[in-house]
Amino acid sequence: MLSDNLKTLLASTEVFSLKSRNFHWNIEGSNFPQYHAFYDALYNESYETVDNIAEYIRVLGAYAPASLTRYAELSVIGDQTKIPRAELMFAESLQDCEKMIELVVAIFDVATAERQQGIANYMAELQDFYGKKSWMIRSILKKDRE
Ligand SMILES: [Fe+2]
Image (tube, rainbow, N blue to C red; front, top):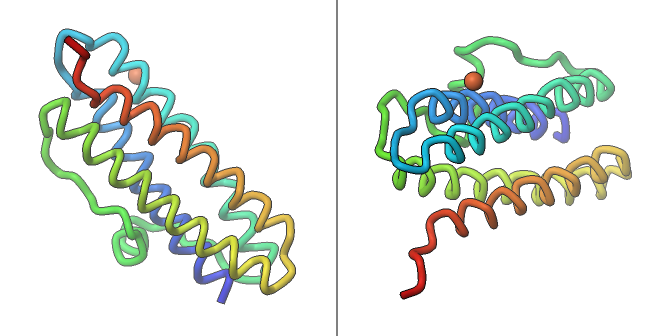
């Protein structure tokens, strides 16, 4: 059911945003100012999508989950309780962005099949968003040319 898929997306986005905030606060290294700012944007921009997703769930007549217990049950993004070093934070965020892309692409197909074009359109926007962030993170992780 489309609303169930969106609940998974809502929970996954909450965990993704929270993890971005963890990394924003706790990242360390000589590029700290850029890394800190990158994760600030990742947190804010992903968190902005949470309300839109929740409202689409309501539009479909279901209730939007809003509890940490439900988010932990539903999220496809794993929680991070530790403080990894910078390179590992970026590697983890890249994997998470790829999981988010997989999820929104799958939901796009369900929304299209149910002729929910507005939701499909929003999934396409989210695919772009996570795709751009993946490109940026891959660029951060690339070793300098000699
Ligand atoms: Fe901050």
